[in-house]
Length: 296
Length: 337
Image 1 (tube, rainbow over the protein chains, first blue to last red):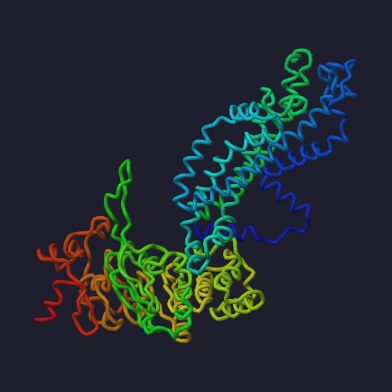
Image 2 (image 1 turned 135 degrees about the vertical axis):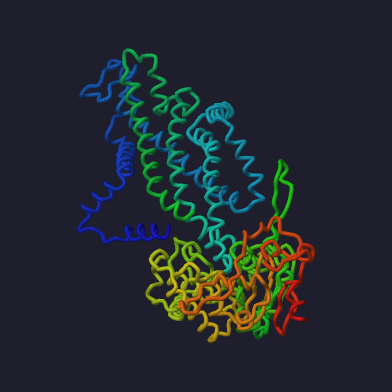
Protein backbone atom coordinates (compact mmCIF):
# COMPACT_ATOMS: atom_id res chain seq x y z
CA UNK A 1 0.00 0.00 0.00
CA UNK A 2 2.86 2.30 0.80
CA UNK A 3 4.10 1.78 -2.72
CA UNK A 4 0.79 2.90 -4.18
CA UNK A 5 0.93 5.96 -1.95
CA UNK A 6 4.38 6.82 -3.14
CA UNK A 7 3.43 6.54 -6.80
CA UNK A 8 0.31 8.68 -6.52
CA UNK A 9 2.14 11.20 -4.39
CA UNK A 10 4.85 11.54 -7.01
CA UNK A 11 2.17 11.80 -9.67
CA UNK A 12 0.54 14.70 -7.91
CA UNK A 13 3.63 16.78 -7.47
CA UNK A 14 4.87 16.19 -11.00
CA UNK A 15 6.20 19.34 -12.63
CA UNK A 16 3.57 21.62 -14.15
CA UNK A 17 3.29 21.57 -17.94
CA UNK A 18 4.65 24.27 -20.19
CA UNK A 19 1.52 26.42 -20.10
CA UNK A 20 -2.01 26.79 -18.85
CA UNK A 21 -3.41 25.31 -22.07
CA UNK A 22 -1.67 21.99 -21.70
CA UNK A 23 -2.49 21.91 -18.02
CA UNK A 24 -6.14 22.48 -18.85
CA UNK A 25 -6.01 19.72 -21.45
CA UNK A 26 -4.58 17.36 -18.87
CA UNK A 27 -7.20 18.31 -16.30
CA UNK A 28 -9.96 17.56 -18.82
CA UNK A 29 -8.36 14.26 -19.80
CA UNK A 30 -8.07 13.18 -16.20
CA UNK A 31 -11.43 14.28 -14.86
CA UNK A 32 -13.81 14.55 -17.81
CA UNK A 33 -16.94 14.27 -15.64
CA UNK A 34 -15.84 16.98 -13.21
CA UNK A 35 -15.00 19.33 -16.06
CA UNK A 36 -18.22 18.59 -18.02
CA UNK A 37 -20.44 18.89 -14.94
CA UNK A 38 -18.60 21.98 -13.76
CA UNK A 39 -18.79 23.75 -17.11
CA UNK A 40 -22.53 23.00 -17.48
CA UNK A 41 -23.20 24.20 -13.97
CA UNK A 42 -21.21 27.41 -14.38
CA UNK A 43 -23.11 28.06 -17.62
CA UNK A 44 -26.45 27.57 -15.87
CA UNK A 45 -25.43 29.76 -12.95
CA UNK A 46 -24.34 32.43 -15.44
CA UNK A 47 -27.71 32.29 -17.19
CA UNK A 48 -29.57 32.46 -13.89
CA UNK A 49 -27.57 35.43 -12.63
CA UNK A 50 -27.84 37.27 -15.96
CA UNK A 51 -31.55 36.47 -16.42
CA UNK A 52 -32.89 40.00 -15.73
CA UNK A 53 -30.56 41.47 -18.37
CA UNK A 54 -30.57 38.85 -21.11
CA UNK A 55 -34.27 37.94 -21.04
CA UNK A 56 -37.49 39.88 -20.88
CA UNK A 57 -40.04 40.24 -18.10
CA UNK A 58 -41.18 36.78 -16.95
CA UNK A 59 -44.49 38.18 -15.64
CA UNK A 60 -45.59 40.27 -18.60
CA UNK A 61 -48.78 38.86 -20.08
CA UNK A 62 -49.52 39.50 -23.77
CA UNK A 63 -52.73 37.61 -24.56
CA UNK A 64 -52.28 38.33 -28.27
CA UNK A 65 -49.19 36.16 -28.29
CA UNK A 66 -50.52 33.27 -26.20
CA UNK A 67 -49.37 29.70 -26.91
CA UNK A 68 -46.93 30.75 -29.62
CA UNK A 69 -44.37 28.10 -30.62
CA UNK A 70 -40.65 28.91 -30.35
CA UNK A 71 -39.72 31.63 -32.79
CA UNK A 72 -37.16 34.37 -33.31
CA UNK A 73 -39.06 36.70 -31.01
CA UNK A 74 -39.94 34.09 -28.35
CA UNK A 75 -37.04 31.61 -28.33
CA UNK A 76 -38.83 29.09 -26.14
CA UNK A 77 -42.39 30.07 -27.21
CA UNK A 78 -45.08 31.48 -24.93
CA UNK A 79 -47.51 30.00 -22.42
CA UNK A 80 -51.26 30.30 -22.14
CA UNK A 81 -51.15 33.89 -20.89
CA UNK A 82 -48.67 34.89 -23.57
CA UNK A 83 -45.74 34.99 -21.12
CA UNK A 84 -42.26 34.47 -22.51
CA UNK A 85 -41.14 30.91 -21.62
CA UNK A 86 -37.47 31.85 -22.18
CA UNK A 87 -37.66 34.58 -19.56
CA UNK A 88 -39.62 32.35 -17.21
CA UNK A 89 -37.20 29.42 -17.62
CA UNK A 90 -34.13 31.54 -16.90
CA UNK A 91 -35.81 33.08 -13.85
CA UNK A 92 -36.84 29.59 -12.81
CA UNK A 93 -33.16 28.60 -12.82
CA UNK A 94 -32.63 31.17 -10.07
CA UNK A 95 -35.21 29.45 -7.85
CA UNK A 96 -33.93 25.95 -8.52
CA UNK A 97 -30.27 26.81 -8.01
CA UNK A 98 -31.05 28.86 -4.89
CA UNK A 99 -32.99 25.97 -3.38
CA UNK A 100 -30.33 23.43 -4.40
CA UNK A 101 -27.38 25.37 -3.04
CA UNK A 102 -29.17 26.63 0.07
CA UNK A 103 -30.33 23.12 1.01
CA UNK A 104 -26.87 21.68 0.29
CA UNK A 105 -25.13 24.39 2.33
CA UNK A 106 -27.48 24.35 5.32
CA UNK A 107 -27.71 20.57 5.55
CA UNK A 108 -23.91 20.28 5.14
CA UNK A 109 -23.22 22.64 8.03
CA UNK A 110 -25.81 20.99 10.28
CA UNK A 111 -24.85 17.51 9.13
CA UNK A 112 -21.17 18.18 9.67
CA UNK A 113 -21.67 19.45 13.21
CA UNK A 114 -24.02 16.65 14.22
CA UNK A 115 -21.94 14.04 12.38
CA UNK A 116 -18.78 15.13 14.21
CA UNK A 117 -20.60 14.93 17.54
CA UNK A 118 -22.12 11.52 16.77
CA UNK A 119 -18.89 10.09 15.42
CA UNK A 120 -16.68 11.36 18.20
CA UNK A 121 -18.83 11.16 21.32
CA UNK A 122 -20.40 7.77 21.80
CA UNK A 123 -22.99 8.91 24.31
CA UNK A 124 -24.39 11.59 22.03
CA UNK A 125 -24.29 9.09 19.19
CA UNK A 126 -26.77 6.65 20.70
CA UNK A 127 -29.43 9.34 21.25
CA UNK A 128 -28.85 11.57 18.24
CA UNK A 129 -28.74 8.78 15.68
CA UNK A 130 -32.18 7.54 16.75
CA UNK A 131 -33.51 11.07 16.23
CA UNK A 132 -31.84 11.08 12.81
CA UNK A 133 -33.48 7.74 11.96
CA UNK A 134 -36.80 9.32 12.85
CA UNK A 135 -36.19 12.38 10.67
CA UNK A 136 -35.07 10.18 7.82
CA UNK A 137 -38.44 8.44 7.85
CA UNK A 138 -40.31 11.69 7.11
CA UNK A 139 -41.10 12.07 3.40
CA UNK A 140 -40.02 15.57 2.41
CA UNK A 141 -43.05 16.17 0.21
CA UNK A 142 -45.49 15.44 3.05
CA UNK A 143 -43.46 17.50 5.49
CA UNK A 144 -43.43 20.44 3.08
CA UNK A 145 -47.17 20.22 2.54
CA UNK A 146 -47.71 20.15 6.30
CA UNK A 147 -45.36 23.08 6.93
CA UNK A 148 -46.88 25.17 4.17
CA UNK A 149 -50.42 24.60 5.39
CA UNK A 150 -49.25 25.74 8.82
CA UNK A 151 -47.44 28.85 7.58
CA UNK A 152 -47.33 31.14 4.55
CA UNK A 153 -45.92 29.49 1.46
CA UNK A 154 -42.50 30.81 0.52
CA UNK A 155 -39.02 29.91 -0.59
CA UNK A 156 -37.66 29.76 2.97
CA UNK A 157 -40.30 27.26 4.08
CA UNK A 158 -39.57 25.09 1.06
CA UNK A 159 -35.86 25.13 1.90
CA UNK A 160 -36.53 24.24 5.55
CA UNK A 161 -38.87 21.44 4.55
CA UNK A 162 -36.27 19.91 2.25
CA UNK A 163 -33.36 20.42 4.67
CA UNK A 164 -34.98 18.49 7.54
CA UNK A 165 -35.01 15.06 5.88
CA UNK A 166 -31.68 15.68 4.09
CA UNK A 167 -29.67 16.40 7.27
CA UNK A 168 -29.64 12.77 8.47
CA UNK A 169 -28.14 11.65 5.16
CA UNK A 170 -25.18 13.98 5.67
CA UNK A 171 -24.93 13.07 9.36
CA UNK A 172 -24.64 9.39 8.47
CA UNK A 173 -21.86 9.99 5.98
CA UNK A 174 -19.87 12.31 8.26
CA UNK A 175 -20.38 10.05 11.26
CA UNK A 176 -19.08 6.98 9.47
CA UNK A 177 -16.02 8.88 8.23
CA UNK A 178 -15.33 10.30 11.71
CA UNK A 179 -15.63 6.82 13.23
CA UNK A 180 -12.94 5.65 10.81
CA UNK A 181 -10.70 8.68 11.36
CA UNK A 182 -11.01 8.34 15.13
CA UNK A 183 -9.10 5.06 15.10
CA UNK A 184 -6.23 6.49 13.03
CA UNK A 185 -2.88 6.53 14.80
CA UNK A 186 -2.42 10.23 13.99
CA UNK A 187 -5.38 10.99 16.27
CA UNK A 188 -3.76 9.08 19.14
CA UNK A 189 -0.51 10.79 18.28
CA UNK A 190 -2.17 14.21 18.53
CA UNK A 191 -3.81 13.33 21.86
CA UNK A 192 -0.42 12.19 23.22
CA UNK A 193 1.00 15.50 22.03
CA UNK A 194 -1.47 17.33 24.23
CA UNK A 195 -4.04 18.33 21.60
CA UNK A 196 -7.39 18.83 23.29
CA UNK A 197 -10.76 17.78 21.96
CA UNK A 198 -11.93 20.99 20.24
CA UNK A 199 -8.65 21.51 18.43
CA UNK A 200 -8.43 17.79 17.67
CA UNK A 201 -11.81 17.88 15.94
CA UNK A 202 -11.12 21.11 14.06
CA UNK A 203 -7.57 20.38 12.97
CA UNK A 204 -7.31 16.63 12.64
CA UNK A 205 -10.78 15.14 12.21
CA UNK A 206 -12.68 17.78 10.22
CA UNK A 207 -10.22 18.34 7.33
CA UNK A 208 -9.99 14.61 6.75
CA UNK A 209 -13.79 14.31 6.66
CA UNK A 210 -14.34 17.10 4.12
CA UNK A 211 -13.94 15.10 0.89
CA UNK A 212 -16.84 12.69 1.41
CA UNK A 213 -18.93 15.57 2.75
CA UNK A 214 -18.47 17.60 -0.44
CA UNK A 215 -19.46 14.62 -2.56
CA UNK A 216 -22.56 13.98 -0.47
CA UNK A 217 -23.48 17.68 -0.62
CA UNK A 218 -23.64 17.57 -4.42
CA UNK A 219 -26.13 14.70 -4.28
CA UNK A 220 -28.20 16.56 -1.72
CA UNK A 221 -28.13 19.63 -3.98
CA UNK A 222 -29.42 17.65 -6.97
CA UNK A 223 -32.11 15.87 -4.99
CA UNK A 224 -33.24 19.18 -3.40
CA UNK A 225 -33.80 20.72 -6.83
CA UNK A 226 -35.92 17.76 -7.87
CA UNK A 227 -37.91 17.85 -4.65
CA UNK A 228 -38.53 21.60 -5.03
CA UNK A 229 -39.79 21.09 -8.58
CA UNK A 230 -42.03 18.28 -7.39
CA UNK A 231 -43.40 20.43 -4.56
CA UNK A 232 -44.06 23.36 -6.88
CA UNK A 233 -45.74 21.07 -9.37
CA UNK A 234 -48.06 19.84 -6.62
CA UNK A 235 -48.76 23.40 -5.58
CA UNK A 236 -47.03 22.91 -2.23
CA UNK A 237 -43.80 24.68 -3.12
CA UNK A 238 -42.96 28.28 -3.79
CA UNK A 239 -46.01 30.53 -4.37
CA UNK A 240 -47.67 30.07 -7.74
CA UNK A 241 -46.79 33.52 -9.06
CA UNK A 242 -43.03 32.82 -8.75
CA UNK A 243 -41.77 31.22 -11.98
CA UNK A 244 -40.04 28.13 -10.62
CA UNK A 245 -39.60 25.23 -13.01
CA UNK A 246 -42.14 23.14 -11.13
CA UNK A 247 -44.68 25.98 -11.27
CA UNK A 248 -44.11 26.59 -14.99
CA UNK A 249 -44.64 22.91 -15.74
CA UNK A 250 -47.71 22.70 -13.49
CA UNK A 251 -49.34 25.75 -15.09
CA UNK A 252 -48.67 24.49 -18.59
CA UNK A 253 -49.90 20.95 -18.22
CA UNK A 254 -53.48 21.72 -19.31
CA UNK A 255 -52.14 22.88 -22.67
CA UNK A 256 -49.60 20.10 -23.01
CA UNK A 257 -50.90 18.94 -26.44
CA UNK A 258 -51.08 22.47 -27.87
CA UNK A 259 -47.93 23.99 -26.32
CA UNK A 260 -45.58 21.15 -25.29
CA UNK A 261 -42.60 23.54 -25.34
CA UNK A 262 -43.82 25.21 -22.14
CA UNK A 263 -43.39 21.88 -20.36
CA UNK A 264 -40.48 20.28 -22.14
CA UNK A 265 -38.11 23.22 -22.06
CA UNK A 266 -38.19 23.92 -18.28
CA UNK A 267 -38.25 20.14 -17.79
CA UNK A 268 -35.11 19.77 -19.91
CA UNK A 269 -33.42 22.57 -17.96
CA UNK A 270 -34.24 20.81 -14.70
CA UNK A 271 -32.89 17.51 -16.03
CA UNK A 272 -29.68 19.11 -17.33
CA UNK A 273 -29.08 21.01 -14.09
CA UNK A 274 -29.54 17.89 -11.96
CA UNK A 275 -27.34 15.96 -14.38
CA UNK A 276 -24.60 18.59 -14.18
CA UNK A 277 -24.60 18.56 -10.38
CA UNK A 278 -24.62 14.76 -10.28
CA UNK A 279 -21.77 14.56 -12.79
CA UNK A 280 -19.76 16.94 -10.67
CA UNK A 281 -20.49 14.79 -7.62
CA UNK A 282 -19.61 11.54 -9.38
CA UNK A 283 -16.41 13.02 -10.74
CA UNK A 284 -15.41 14.34 -7.33
CA UNK A 285 -16.19 11.00 -5.76
CA UNK A 286 -13.97 9.15 -8.24
CA UNK A 287 -11.24 11.72 -7.79
CA UNK A 288 -11.40 11.77 -4.01
CA UNK A 289 -12.14 8.12 -3.30
CA UNK A 290 -8.72 6.59 -3.93
CA UNK A 291 -7.23 9.05 -1.49
CA UNK A 292 -10.00 8.24 0.90
CA UNK A 293 -9.29 4.54 0.63
CA UNK A 294 -5.65 5.31 1.26
CA UNK A 295 -6.39 7.21 4.42
CA UNK A 296 -9.19 5.22 5.94
CA UNK B 1 -2.88 21.44 37.20
CA UNK B 2 -0.05 20.54 39.54
CA UNK B 3 2.69 22.79 38.25
CA UNK B 4 4.94 21.86 41.16
CA UNK B 5 5.04 18.28 39.89
CA UNK B 6 6.13 19.50 36.49
CA UNK B 7 8.93 21.76 37.64
CA UNK B 8 10.42 19.33 40.14
CA UNK B 9 13.71 17.64 39.44
CA UNK B 10 13.33 14.51 37.35
CA UNK B 11 12.10 11.56 39.37
CA UNK B 12 14.58 8.66 39.66
CA UNK B 13 11.87 6.32 38.40
CA UNK B 14 9.96 8.30 35.76
CA UNK B 15 7.64 5.44 34.89
CA UNK B 16 6.42 2.58 37.03
CA UNK B 17 3.50 0.26 36.53
CA UNK B 18 2.01 -2.11 39.12
CA UNK B 19 -0.33 -5.00 38.30
CA UNK B 20 -1.59 -3.28 35.19
CA UNK B 21 -4.69 -4.98 33.80
CA UNK B 22 -6.52 -4.13 30.61
CA UNK B 23 -9.45 -6.30 29.66
CA UNK B 24 -11.60 -5.57 26.64
CA UNK B 25 -15.20 -6.62 27.27
CA UNK B 26 -16.75 -9.04 24.81
CA UNK B 27 -20.42 -8.25 24.38
CA UNK B 28 -22.96 -10.42 22.66
CA UNK B 29 -26.65 -11.06 22.40
CA UNK B 30 -29.56 -8.73 21.96
CA UNK B 31 -28.90 -6.71 25.10
CA UNK B 32 -25.14 -6.47 24.48
CA UNK B 33 -24.41 -7.97 27.84
CA UNK B 34 -20.79 -8.62 28.68
CA UNK B 35 -20.16 -12.32 28.12
CA UNK B 36 -16.40 -12.39 28.45
CA UNK B 37 -13.22 -10.38 28.27
CA UNK B 38 -10.16 -10.32 26.10
CA UNK B 39 -7.41 -10.27 28.68
CA UNK B 40 -4.97 -8.25 26.61
CA UNK B 41 -2.87 -7.22 29.60
CA UNK B 42 -3.27 -9.20 32.78
CA UNK B 43 -1.14 -8.07 35.68
CA UNK B 44 1.99 -6.41 34.34
CA UNK B 45 4.46 -4.69 36.65
CA UNK B 46 7.69 -2.93 35.85
CA UNK B 47 9.58 0.21 36.69
CA UNK B 48 12.13 1.97 34.54
CA UNK B 49 15.00 3.87 36.20
CA UNK B 50 15.78 7.28 34.77
CA UNK B 51 17.94 7.28 31.66
CA UNK B 52 17.48 3.60 30.91
CA UNK B 53 15.53 1.57 28.39
CA UNK B 54 13.20 -1.29 29.16
CA UNK B 55 12.68 -3.49 26.11
CA UNK B 56 9.30 -5.18 26.03
CA UNK B 57 9.33 -8.17 23.66
CA UNK B 58 6.78 -10.75 22.66
CA UNK B 59 4.86 -12.21 19.75
CA UNK B 60 2.19 -10.17 18.06
CA UNK B 61 -1.01 -10.25 20.04
CA UNK B 62 0.69 -10.70 23.40
CA UNK B 63 -0.43 -7.29 24.64
CA UNK B 64 2.70 -5.20 24.11
CA UNK B 65 0.95 -2.39 22.30
CA UNK B 66 -1.94 -2.45 24.75
CA UNK B 67 0.60 -1.87 27.53
CA UNK B 68 1.91 1.13 25.56
CA UNK B 69 -1.53 2.61 24.95
CA UNK B 70 -2.65 2.06 28.52
CA UNK B 71 0.50 3.61 29.95
CA UNK B 72 -0.11 6.58 27.63
CA UNK B 73 -3.68 6.72 28.94
CA UNK B 74 -4.99 6.38 25.42
CA UNK B 75 -6.83 3.38 26.85
CA UNK B 76 -8.41 3.37 30.29
CA UNK B 77 -6.76 0.69 32.48
CA UNK B 78 -9.09 -1.93 33.96
CA UNK B 79 -7.06 -2.02 37.17
CA UNK B 80 -3.54 -1.53 38.46
CA UNK B 81 -1.48 1.58 39.01
CA UNK B 82 0.46 3.79 36.59
CA UNK B 83 2.95 6.09 38.28
CA UNK B 84 4.37 8.80 36.10
CA UNK B 85 7.23 10.72 37.68
CA UNK B 86 5.99 9.80 41.14
CA UNK B 87 2.39 10.84 40.38
CA UNK B 88 -0.39 8.28 40.22
CA UNK B 89 -2.12 8.98 36.90
CA UNK B 90 -4.10 5.73 36.74
CA UNK B 91 -7.56 7.17 37.09
CA UNK B 92 -7.06 10.74 35.92
CA UNK B 93 -9.73 12.06 33.58
CA UNK B 94 -8.59 13.10 30.09
CA UNK B 95 -8.65 16.76 31.19
CA UNK B 96 -6.59 16.05 34.33
CA UNK B 97 -4.21 13.83 32.38
CA UNK B 98 -3.49 16.65 29.94
CA UNK B 99 -0.93 18.41 32.14
CA UNK B 100 0.95 15.13 32.64
CA UNK B 101 1.24 14.44 28.94
CA UNK B 102 4.26 16.71 28.86
CA UNK B 103 6.15 14.08 30.82
CA UNK B 104 5.41 11.14 28.58
CA UNK B 105 5.44 11.09 24.82
CA UNK B 106 5.18 8.34 22.27
CA UNK B 107 6.50 7.31 18.88
CA UNK B 108 4.19 5.02 16.95
CA UNK B 109 4.92 2.01 14.81
CA UNK B 110 3.52 3.10 11.48
CA UNK B 111 5.18 6.31 10.29
CA UNK B 112 2.60 6.55 7.49
CA UNK B 113 -0.62 6.60 9.47
CA UNK B 114 0.63 8.21 12.69
CA UNK B 115 1.17 11.61 11.07
CA UNK B 116 -1.79 13.64 9.80
CA UNK B 117 -1.54 13.72 5.98
CA UNK B 118 -3.08 17.19 5.79
CA UNK B 119 -0.54 19.00 7.95
CA UNK B 120 2.98 20.05 7.08
CA UNK B 121 5.92 18.55 8.93
CA UNK B 122 6.48 21.86 10.74
CA UNK B 123 2.85 22.03 11.84
CA UNK B 124 2.99 18.48 13.18
CA UNK B 125 6.13 19.09 15.24
CA UNK B 126 4.99 22.56 16.31
CA UNK B 127 1.58 21.44 17.52
CA UNK B 128 2.69 20.12 20.95
CA UNK B 129 4.62 23.38 21.47
CA UNK B 130 1.42 25.33 20.88
CA UNK B 131 -0.71 22.93 22.95
CA UNK B 132 1.36 23.50 26.05
CA UNK B 133 2.04 27.16 25.23
CA UNK B 134 5.76 26.40 25.20
CA UNK B 135 6.53 28.57 22.20
CA UNK B 136 4.53 30.59 19.69
CA UNK B 137 5.21 32.56 16.54
CA UNK B 138 8.80 32.90 15.42
CA UNK B 139 10.08 31.31 18.64
CA UNK B 140 8.05 28.23 17.79
CA UNK B 141 9.52 28.20 14.29
CA UNK B 142 13.03 28.33 15.72
CA UNK B 143 12.27 25.52 18.14
CA UNK B 144 10.85 23.39 15.36
CA UNK B 145 13.88 24.04 13.17
CA UNK B 146 16.19 23.10 16.05
CA UNK B 147 14.21 19.90 16.64
CA UNK B 148 14.44 19.04 12.94
CA UNK B 149 18.18 19.52 13.05
CA UNK B 150 18.49 17.45 16.22
CA UNK B 151 16.78 14.41 14.69
CA UNK B 152 18.72 14.70 11.44
CA UNK B 153 16.13 16.36 9.20
CA UNK B 154 16.81 19.46 7.13
CA UNK B 155 15.23 22.49 8.83
CA UNK B 156 14.07 23.71 5.38
CA UNK B 157 11.79 20.70 5.08
CA UNK B 158 9.27 22.03 7.65
CA UNK B 159 6.96 23.16 4.84
CA UNK B 160 6.78 19.70 3.26
CA UNK B 161 3.86 17.34 3.72
CA UNK B 162 4.25 13.93 5.28
CA UNK B 163 3.94 12.04 1.99
CA UNK B 164 7.04 13.80 0.70
CA UNK B 165 9.22 12.10 3.33
CA UNK B 166 10.66 8.59 3.30
CA UNK B 167 9.79 6.06 5.99
CA UNK B 168 12.93 6.73 8.02
CA UNK B 169 12.46 10.49 7.74
CA UNK B 170 8.87 10.16 8.90
CA UNK B 171 10.00 8.26 11.95
CA UNK B 172 12.52 11.03 12.67
CA UNK B 173 9.59 13.43 12.36
CA UNK B 174 7.69 11.36 14.91
CA UNK B 175 10.69 11.51 17.24
CA UNK B 176 10.97 15.29 16.79
CA UNK B 177 7.28 15.64 17.69
CA UNK B 178 7.80 13.50 20.80
CA UNK B 179 10.84 15.55 21.83
CA UNK B 180 9.06 18.89 21.36
CA UNK B 181 7.69 19.06 24.89
CA UNK B 182 10.95 17.83 26.52
CA UNK B 183 9.43 14.69 28.07
CA UNK B 184 11.03 12.43 30.67
CA UNK B 185 9.69 9.22 29.18
CA UNK B 186 9.15 8.17 25.60
CA UNK B 187 7.08 5.10 24.82
CA UNK B 188 8.44 3.65 21.59
CA UNK B 189 5.86 1.27 20.14
CA UNK B 190 7.72 -0.76 17.51
CA UNK B 191 9.33 2.42 16.18
CA UNK B 192 11.58 0.69 13.68
CA UNK B 193 9.68 -2.43 12.64
CA UNK B 194 8.26 -0.72 9.54
CA UNK B 195 11.71 0.37 8.36
CA UNK B 196 14.51 -1.19 6.30
CA UNK B 197 17.32 -2.75 8.28
CA UNK B 198 19.85 -0.04 7.38
CA UNK B 199 17.40 2.72 8.31
CA UNK B 200 16.50 0.83 11.51
CA UNK B 201 20.08 1.12 12.69
CA UNK B 202 20.17 4.87 11.98
CA UNK B 203 16.96 5.50 13.90
CA UNK B 204 18.04 3.27 16.80
CA UNK B 205 21.36 5.08 17.05
CA UNK B 206 19.56 8.41 17.00
CA UNK B 207 17.38 7.22 19.88
CA UNK B 208 20.44 6.06 21.83
CA UNK B 209 22.21 9.40 21.24
CA UNK B 210 19.15 11.32 22.39
CA UNK B 211 18.91 9.19 25.50
CA UNK B 212 22.55 9.84 26.41
CA UNK B 213 22.21 13.54 25.74
CA UNK B 214 18.86 14.25 27.37
CA UNK B 215 18.68 11.52 30.00
CA UNK B 216 15.50 10.13 28.47
CA UNK B 217 13.78 7.03 29.76
CA UNK B 218 12.45 4.63 27.14
CA UNK B 219 9.83 1.94 27.14
CA UNK B 220 10.82 0.19 23.93
CA UNK B 221 8.32 -2.24 22.49
CA UNK B 222 9.37 -4.66 19.79
CA UNK B 223 9.04 -8.19 18.52
CA UNK B 224 12.58 -8.10 17.19
CA UNK B 225 15.13 -9.46 19.66
CA UNK B 226 18.11 -8.06 17.75
CA UNK B 227 16.67 -4.55 17.94
CA UNK B 228 15.84 -4.92 21.63
CA UNK B 229 19.32 -6.19 22.29
CA UNK B 230 20.79 -3.14 20.59
CA UNK B 231 18.93 -0.49 22.56
CA UNK B 232 17.73 -1.94 25.90
CA UNK B 233 19.24 -1.97 29.36
CA UNK B 234 16.60 -4.28 30.73
CA UNK B 235 14.30 -6.63 28.91
CA UNK B 236 10.84 -7.92 29.79
CA UNK B 237 9.40 -10.82 27.83
CA UNK B 238 5.64 -10.88 27.47
CA UNK B 239 3.43 -13.85 26.73
CA UNK B 240 -0.35 -13.67 26.54
CA UNK B 241 -0.78 -10.53 28.60
CA UNK B 242 1.83 -11.31 31.25
CA UNK B 243 5.51 -10.70 31.77
CA UNK B 244 7.13 -14.15 31.97
CA UNK B 245 10.73 -13.06 32.39
CA UNK B 246 12.42 -9.78 33.23
CA UNK B 247 16.09 -9.05 33.81
CA UNK B 248 19.07 -7.13 32.53
CA UNK B 249 19.84 -7.45 28.86
CA UNK B 250 23.11 -9.30 29.46
CA UNK B 251 21.55 -11.88 31.76
CA UNK B 252 18.60 -12.46 29.49
CA UNK B 253 20.65 -13.15 26.41
CA UNK B 254 23.30 -15.12 28.32
CA UNK B 255 21.06 -17.30 30.44
CA UNK B 256 17.31 -17.15 29.86
CA UNK B 257 15.35 -18.90 32.62
CA UNK B 258 11.90 -19.14 31.11
CA UNK B 259 11.28 -21.79 28.42
CA UNK B 260 9.40 -19.22 26.32
CA UNK B 261 12.39 -16.88 26.29
CA UNK B 262 14.59 -19.82 25.33
CA UNK B 263 12.33 -20.59 22.41
CA UNK B 264 12.30 -16.94 21.33
CA UNK B 265 16.09 -16.72 21.45
CA UNK B 266 16.43 -20.00 19.57
CA UNK B 267 14.05 -18.80 16.87
CA UNK B 268 15.92 -15.53 16.29
CA UNK B 269 18.07 -15.72 13.17
CA UNK B 270 21.81 -15.76 13.79
CA UNK B 271 23.59 -13.49 11.32
CA UNK B 272 26.63 -15.75 11.18
CA UNK B 273 26.45 -18.85 8.96
CA UNK B 274 29.54 -20.35 10.61
CA UNK B 275 27.86 -20.37 14.00
CA UNK B 276 25.43 -23.23 13.95
CA UNK B 277 22.86 -23.54 16.61
CA UNK B 278 23.20 -26.86 18.39
CA UNK B 279 19.85 -27.16 20.06
CA UNK B 280 16.76 -25.61 18.74
CA UNK B 281 13.53 -25.29 20.68
CA UNK B 282 10.62 -25.17 18.30
CA UNK B 283 7.28 -24.25 19.79
CA UNK B 284 4.28 -26.21 18.62
CA UNK B 285 0.89 -24.68 18.00
CA UNK B 286 -0.36 -21.12 18.14
CA UNK B 287 -0.69 -18.56 20.87
CA UNK B 288 -3.96 -19.33 22.71
CA UNK B 289 -6.71 -16.71 22.52
CA UNK B 290 -6.41 -14.01 25.19
CA UNK B 291 -10.21 -14.25 25.46
CA UNK B 292 -9.84 -17.81 26.79
CA UNK B 293 -6.37 -18.08 28.35
CA UNK B 294 -5.32 -21.57 29.48
CA UNK B 295 -5.60 -22.56 33.13
CA UNK B 296 -2.52 -22.65 35.33
CA UNK B 297 0.58 -21.43 33.56
CA UNK B 298 -0.49 -19.62 30.41
CA UNK B 299 2.40 -21.16 28.51
CA UNK B 300 1.73 -24.80 29.42
CA UNK B 301 -0.05 -25.59 26.12
CA UNK B 302 3.16 -24.98 24.18
CA UNK B 303 5.84 -25.55 26.80
CA UNK B 304 8.30 -28.42 26.32
CA UNK B 305 8.72 -28.70 30.10
CA UNK B 306 5.07 -28.62 31.11
CA UNK B 307 3.63 -31.27 33.40
CA UNK B 308 0.40 -31.77 35.36
CA UNK B 309 1.24 -29.11 37.94
CA UNK B 310 1.66 -26.46 35.24
CA UNK B 311 -1.95 -26.96 34.15
CA UNK B 312 -3.20 -26.12 37.62
CA UNK B 313 -0.79 -23.69 39.26
CA UNK B 314 -0.31 -20.25 37.87
CA UNK B 315 3.34 -19.30 38.48
CA UNK B 316 4.06 -15.80 39.74
CA UNK B 317 7.00 -13.74 38.58
CA UNK B 318 9.69 -14.62 41.14
CA UNK B 319 13.33 -13.77 41.55
CA UNK B 320 15.28 -16.75 40.29
CA UNK B 321 18.66 -15.09 40.50
CA UNK B 322 19.84 -11.67 41.59
CA UNK B 323 17.86 -9.15 39.55
CA UNK B 324 16.45 -11.93 37.39
CA UNK B 325 12.72 -12.60 37.48
CA UNK B 326 10.96 -15.47 35.80
CA UNK B 327 7.52 -17.03 36.06
CA UNK B 328 8.07 -20.76 35.70
CA UNK B 329 7.29 -23.61 38.09
CA UNK B 330 10.06 -25.74 36.66
CA UNK B 331 12.94 -23.34 36.76
CA UNK B 332 13.24 -22.19 40.39
CA UNK B 333 13.24 -25.87 41.33
CA UNK B 334 16.00 -26.57 38.84
CA UNK B 335 17.98 -23.62 40.10
CA UNK B 336 17.65 -24.89 43.67
CA UNK B 337 18.97 -28.36 42.81
